[in-house]
Length: 240
Image 1: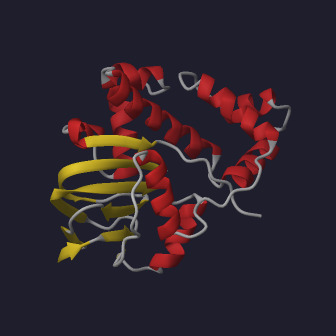
Image 2: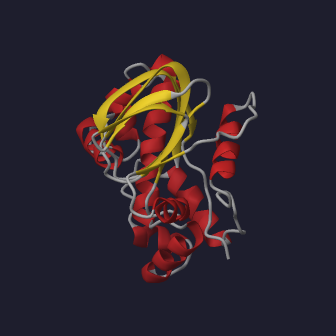
């Protein structure tokens, strides 16, 4: 999951290959979803590939991008049941000065069971550490499998079983997370951050970012003073 807090946000029509959850924290917002105008929305669960635009100039909006291959993506697919979107009529009350914690807790209340976890196999946690330390390397699946003394096929299966996402998708999201984090928090140029995290160049990063989220990274960050990057990745395993 990638989430952020956007202030005074106006977003033109676009779409995402992932699921999206949008929640207003102050005042209702207006939106155009699949060609239909809606006013006074508190929040929405939005399906994949649905064209939409949003205008929330007088509010703060929490936005969550959720990988379709994850357990939470499966939850949203069941909830949406083929519909373009489902409105969120009643937003659970209560705030927290720690926005990262608040964002996770809010999604838990909107999607019960969101944070259900079980202990992750120690070999996979070792793989996480190796991946984090080598995001600027090619990171082939068989290479990581060798590090934890598993065959490539066994590692592929175990990784998906323990994390709920394929190895390649996990690595891509981790790299995207780190690029955005380094641009926002460390002030690195996007071109530098892209290369440091395993992308061939900025164009390669931009292409994969747009393919994943339906909007360019520059569009997301062009008013970065109004964006607070919250949870670049939430590690959630499939419940037993």
